[in-house]
Structures are given as C-alpha cells and as structure tokens.
Length: 271
Image 1: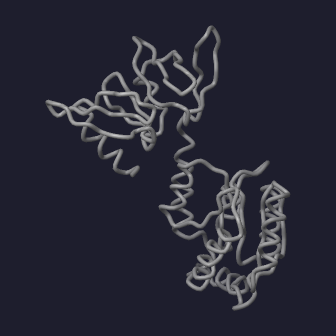
Image 2: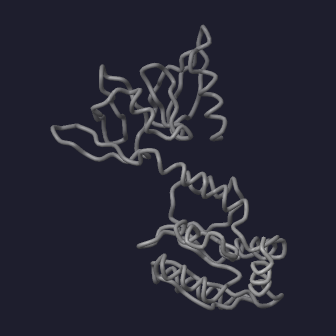
Image 3: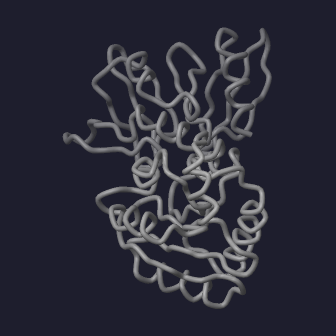
C-alpha cells in the first residue's frame, strides 16, 4: 500500500471508544432502526446517512467512517456498486444490510463477511457489531480485503446466469423466476419447467437451457432432467449404481450413473 494511503487509513482508524459509523439504506424505517441501535451502543458515533448508492459514496468519502452499514439493494447504485466506486481507496469495515436470497447469504457466510438480514432486531445487530469490533483491531490496511473481494467475485459471477425464464403455458407467455424452478425435463426440442405453480414449456433444448443456469444451484441428473439442488431431500440407492432423487415436493427423479459422481460432488458443496 502506498505510504499516503497508509497515512489516510491511520486517520480513519477507530479509537477505543469512538467508532464512526455511516448508515446507507433506501428504507427510512431501516435507517431509523439502525440509528437507534447505534445511539444505544457504547462507543459508536453516527456521522452520516445515505438514501442511495451515489449518496453513500459521497458520505463515505467525506466522513471517512470506521464502519458502514451498507444496503445491498439501493436505487441508482447498489451496495456492490458503492464498493466498486470506492475501489483503490481506503475502506471502512462493512456490514451488509440485505433482504437478499439464500445464495447471497451463503456467500456472505462462506467468506466471513458480516451482514444483517432484514428484518433484524437489536440482538442480531449486537452480534454483528461484536464481530466488527474484533476485526477493526486486526485490519492490515484500508484497501478492500480478501473477504470482500471473494464475496464480490462470487456474486458478480452469478450475474452471468439467468434469473428468470420466459415460459409458455395456458396459451400465454409468463415469467418464472429461476428460484421457483423445482426441476426441468427435456421435451423433444424444448424443455418443460416444473414449479409449485405448474408446468411450463421453454422454447429451447434442455442442453441450451442448462448453460444459462448457475451450476451451483442446478445440476444435470439424467440426459433428460435438471434439478434444483435446493429441492433435493433424499437419495435412495437402486440397482446398477443408479439412485432415486426425492425432491421436497415429493417428485421422484432418476440419477443415472453417468451423472452420479458429478451430481454428488455438486450436492456436497451445497450441504
């Protein structure tokens, strides 16, 4: 790190009883709640608030806080965009505030990045704050540390995969969120998507559709079937090295030998 940056970080560093805090969230109720928790916590000082991403960048640059509670989803620029805008600059400790899905929460957990999952209470706030206090004394410098880099890389990689599918059913074209999909089966040159709401036809082959799905969340189990890993409840062995996959919906699918090892490895990364 350049000497000038080290000097700037030392000026940012927290004193024992004075942790300067910024809150960035587009929901007034969340900002008020965090402000109240901060006011009640010993050694915290709220020095700025932001209602959107651009405001967050400006406030962080102006106030140079020790800690920021950063909403993941904000107008104009999301929480990850805020960190992108500050790349190369000294950064405060970050606690993400999020209503994000299970995949993102898993990424935060795996890389030991602190977060508050909406809705949260004061007890959960204190847990996150305790972790932050211990890490503030261990920081090696002000640049984006390895944990943040890792979680950002994982979440950015996710963006290349489909989050919704255009499907046909009941004489109309609908939008199905990928998280709603239980499993997918081949239907000649098309694919049939199974969800809790019903079955829908996608006008592309299952092989083409597979390339659009995040391999951390979906796996091929048969040449004519793809399953959502989050729906897998049980594996039952059969003769010849095959298994029956039982989904949380009660559906039963065959796991063929050709896909068995890859599927079990993929599933193991999720449990």
